[in-house]
Image 1 (tube, helix red, strand yellow):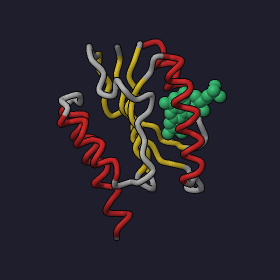
Image 2: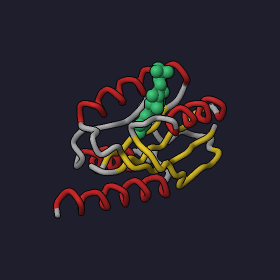
Image 3: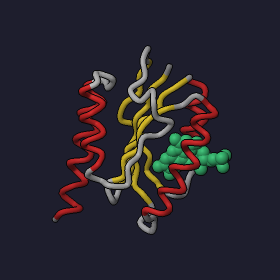
Image 4: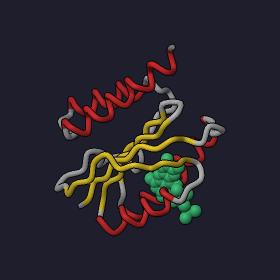
Length: 134
Ligand SMILES: Cc1cc2nc3c(=O)[nH]c(=O)nc-3n(C[C@H](O)[C@H](O)[C@H](O)COP(=O)(O)O)c2cc1C
């Protein structure tokens, strides 16, 4: 299996409702394609981890790359994995930005999450928090 994490810049006009639509669409497709992962939106950027059969991950990434709801997609980690980080989630997402911390902490405590993936996501959340609260 393949696991890919990227960051991108969200369309500045995008709102929570648009993201809810996006997440519903992602969950439906991912359930069909055997993909799992997590999406974080920090008010400016997305970070997404997508994992599953390599061909399905690549096809999905190509679709995501062409999506006008964001731009500047840059991979920050790509690796072969034996086990999934987010096996139980077709796409983990919580609209409360702060809620992500609790989700990740709970996952890490359950030993389901790769330590480097956890650090990347936790750091990304912290980066966004400075913007949101300043
Ligand atoms: C930040 C972001 C993350 C996305 N994540 C997924 C995803 O995990 N799975 C997915 O199928 N589509 C995802 N999409 C949507 C795709 O870009 C594309 O719109 C969708 O796959 C097309 O689905 P359809 O063929 O059912 O119309 C994402 C889009 C964005 C902007």
